[in-house]
Image (cartoon, rainbow, N blue to C red; front, side):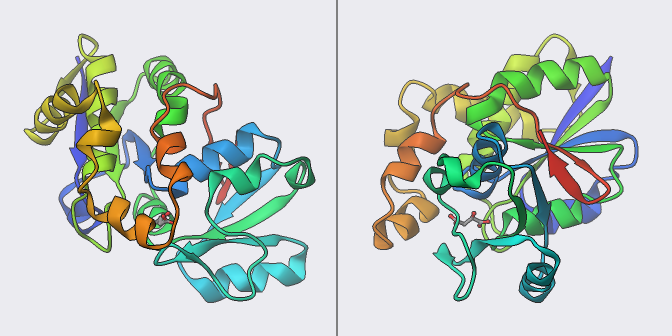
Length: 233
Ligand code: MLT
């Protein structure tokens, strides 16, 4: 049977081989939720960058720069990291160069995988269907916060493990733990996450509606896939 595993933070990536797997990168608050929303709403492509300077350099090639550091839009960037910024008509057809504190770092650490796809609660079922069709072993990479564990990405991992149960066996204990965490939280994820570190961080920045939106399940049917360094729907 195929296997499923969960890397709880990018700093644990050295423990996993990605070459034969579909890797699902998740950063619920808010990078991957934002990427899914942007591509579902007509953004043409997203080029993810780990480094600010590499992202900024894309401006001269006709890209809009987008993303954040520590949750705040970067000075001089065209767009920030709220999903709501990407739902407007003006974003349609744009090519984005995107960098975030954790999400795009997790993508960079997953390079070399058989495929890299972008997961969020917003496209949870579409991701599950895609993974079953691809027939590969799966690694879910939680972006966490600066190398540390976070609850919301682990909840997503658990939700995906729960959906795929029966078709995949867990490779170690992290998928089992993530699933149990999700089962305890699923009836009210917002309440479960009320003390989560990044919820508190976003609250300090007065970002509230993003939290609720990013926890909404199956809003979009898109599965962003990284090909030649570019994410498209
Ligand atoms: C990240 O990559 O860490 C996040 O997207 C931060 C945020 O903007 O909430």
